[in-house]
Length: 128
Ligand code: HEC
Image (tube, rainbow, N blue to C red; front, side, top):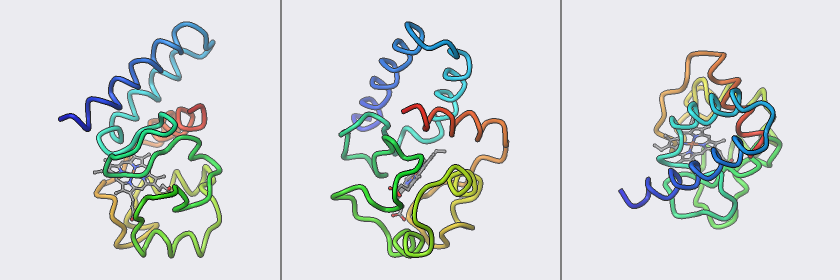
């Protein structure tokens, strides 16, 4: 459980920061809750590595499969050859059904069906 504890702690800190300053606390809190689908494998804390998935700090607009030192699958690299960046549209499609966007990729995740929850999550990722 050591791996899961670190991002949980980081999220706790982010939560406090949001309460202190951001005007859209509620939206951010909902996005943070939606990120619970992801945080066992991903962190949004810059520089935090060692989880199953690549760090997602600044993922909105980031080039695909570009986190230095992460061993991406061939399938995700193939996606990077087809699409340049993680646009919000592409991210939304990937989170809906990772297998449909990059068949055979290493991310063992079924997807989030609820469009509102995906929108909150993407807003959260945009802010982190
Ligand atoms: C069970 C672990 C796991 C879960 C849960 C998971 N991911 Fe992933 N994710 C991965 C792995 C592993 C990869 C690398 C995939 C590859 O190389 O094929 C990845 C890759 C990604 C990428 C590509 C990053 C890049 O640098 O191009 C994005 C974006 C992403 N995940 C978002 C999410 C989001 C958002 C969630 C939650 C809704 C999530 N993931 C849930 C393991 C996971």
